[in-house]
Image 1: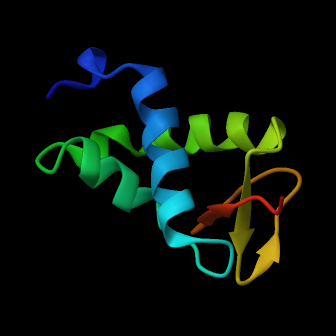
Image 2 (image 1 turned 60 degrees about the vertical axis):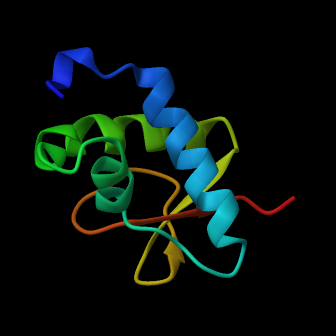
Length: 86
């Protein structure tokens, strides 16, 4: 599915569903989200997945971690997404 056909809402929903299923103790890779949406063209979706993850983090819905540390500011390199604490 071409990148321009993917709704940002679908990306957000997928992030929230996958982090919910994984639970508070575990995290997901953003690539898992992209692959769940489009297994063939997932690499093209990565910037959008990261962008939507930042929005969800800023809304307090998920946490973004790197090497098990919560990131509250700029993001560089490999990250993980996890369900926000209740």
